[in-house]
Length: 129
Image 1: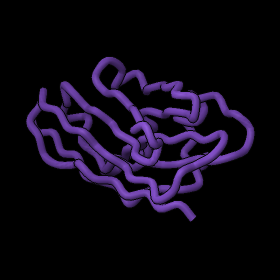
Image 2: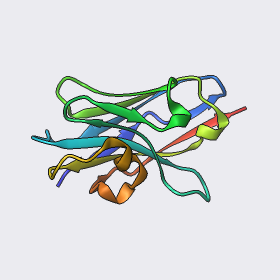
Image 3: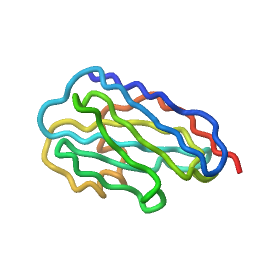
Image 4: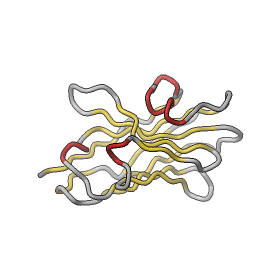
């Protein structure tokens, strides 16, 4: 079973930056998708960004141009570079993995968290105004 461990969360002021990391316990072969989701108090879990094994990415509209999802060369660490942070970005951020199966359209993955089978424990991001 894959273990995902997030790090890099913290508290910043509006306009600041943070870089989240998600360490994957093993290399994933074949088709896979890794994503960042977030959940604010009282709200549903929201897809933020997703990347597939080909390096294709997609983002939720609210973070386009501010956040960047990427992986290291060994594809065992997932990153989320977050710039120009806003108070509405405050949430617990989770990384998630979907490995194997047929290819799925990336926007669909962002909108349906149950499509991911493995999840990290989450890291808190707090943006103050």
